[in-house]
Amino acid sequence: ALLSAVRINGDGQEVLYLAEGDNVRLGCPYVLDPEDYGPNGLDIEWMQVNSDPAHHRENVFLSYQDKRINHGNLPHLQQRVRFAASDPSQYDASINLMNLQVSDTATYECRVKKTTMATRKVIVTVQARPAVPMCWTEGHMTSGNDVVLKCYASGGSQPLSYKWAKISGHHYPYRTRPLSTSLSGLNNGDLVLKDISRADDGLYQCTVANNVGYSVCVVEVKVSDSRRIGVIIGIVLGFLLALGCLAVGIWGLVCCCC
Image 1 (cartoon, rainbow, N blue to C red):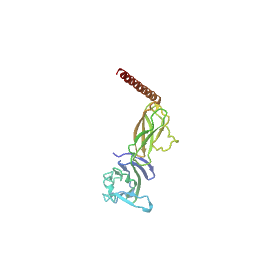
Image 2: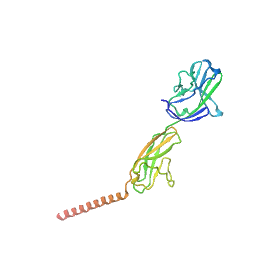
Image 3: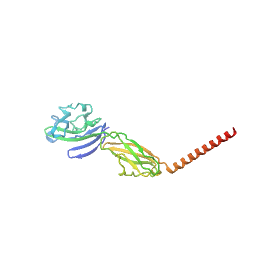
Image 4: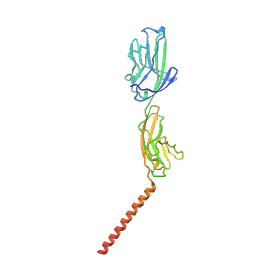
């Protein structure tokens, strides 16, 4: 299926931001002036245009001349490009470009020529979607401590934006807290939870996005009460001490009987 794209319409051209692997239709519908009517002499060319004036070069990769379709001098496009209409002479010179690659980023120009010539440019930027990120936590999850939620995507075209949201647990929905500026070594995907409590328990989702897509990962925060831990430790130690005293008493009684 042909996907819709992020587009910025300009005068006589359009700008498309597309994801790697997508398919796209580059539009070039046209009309003929009265002096151009007639079946003969219609030429259509699609080319990649180098925007650097010092190395100006036009690579024609698809054309229609003398009622024949020809592939040009860009072999890497030959298997992935075709005219959208079975007969481009019927007022539509649009093309379908399949399985987009990052290397397809370029300015594409359509030229329709008869006794006069009309042109249309499409600026195509192909980007890689963000890779599935990794989520993890750093810090002790006990009440009163600070915990850092970490999120990192190893792939995807820059710039990548990171956003955290709480998706379950106490106080959901949850407004994400701003990053602490007093801590050093923070990355774009880090979120600092300061002075945590049981109210911070829940699942947190990190979304990594760019112009052409997004990916997510989830991490769980489960805060334990340090006072409860202290009580539990005290009970365990007391129980072990009582067992030790009981063992010593039994040993002494056995010695006396012997």
